[in-house]
Length: 323
Image 1 (tube, rainbow, N blue to C red):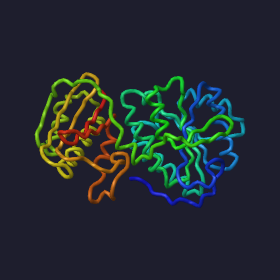
Image 2: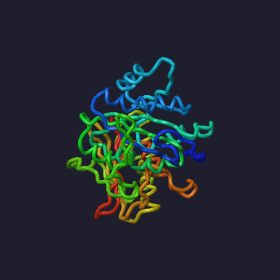
Image 3: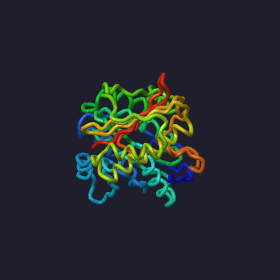
Image 4: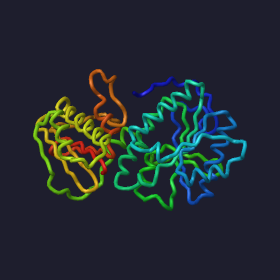
């Protein structure tokens, strides 16, 4: 479950001094020297101030930072690939981490991080939603987050989204400037559109108005041992939750389609309704769980990709699990 935290008084340092909530920056760099010129003062100042200071980089950049740190300076290293798996899970885990530091008395937490390059591929929109949503999801914590992006290796459309999801940018020399093109998550999230993935073949199975139990049985029967048992269980949970949501919150007709492709299993559930209006749906739980509100959030943590589409035929949730 998500862990709430109380925001302490704003006894903060550096550019975030006096700020309440999440101080979210992008750090655009070209090459390792520029990356260090931006990140090292941020880390060293955090350690000097006695603040929890974390580095969430891939191994190459983590090693770069380790080599540059003075021997007597200690920061916490977290492997980026292990932390950035699925956006909803990443948010849940970081919220728990931040809550622990706040309970221990931290008045500011510094995090320098980078998304793995694999997130810049066809599923980037999932992570663009993440970068936008955390402006809200982390805002009850005294966090200063610096997200590093390589100008030379990051696709142009990703850099455009990064500029629109980060309120500020950090540069060498201790410069911290507001982003003129920043878009608040309440505006960015409803406007993001998934790029076309190409035509799909006819589905292997199509069910009309299935019950959650029928959907679970269909997943197991059609998979035929392609997925590992734990991943098959996760997929069955996701499909069951999605069908339950369609019956509970959507309108008829309800249709489920499944594709057992060579490299992945894809399942879509469409109902005739409008879908959720909450821009953070799926990335954060809604309500207390007693009356629902957790189904889409659970689904986002179970599968390798989740997309939502609002179209003339209604609302469609598509879940994907790679084989």
